[in-house]
Length: 97
Image (cartoon, rainbow, N blue to C red; front, top):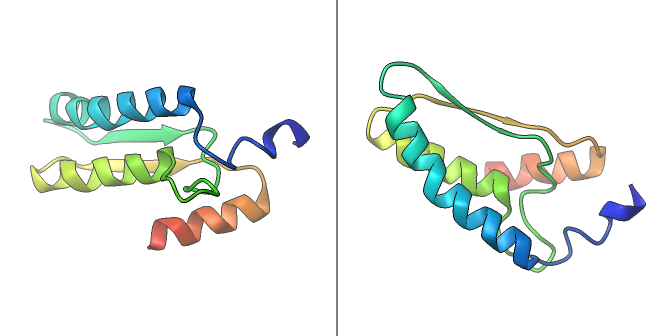
C-alpha cells in the first residue's frame, strides 16, 4: 500500500479528468440505462471519499449523481470498494455527511 499513501493527499490532473467524466457521464448513464431497471455505480478503488486537501473524490461524486438521478425516478445502487480499514472508516463517515 505504500505506493497509494500519497495518492489521496491532493487531487491530480488525471483525477480532475476522471471526475469530470464521472460527473457528466454517470447522470447521463442513469437517465438512459435506468429507465426500466436499477443502475449500479461501482467504485473499485474508492479511498476515503475526500482528498486530504478537502476536494471530493469519486465516491462522493457518484453518490451525488445517484441523488440527482433519484429526482427523476431512477433507481441507482452504489458499491464502494476500499481495502484499507482506516480509509474504509473515513469513507463511511464522508458518505454520511
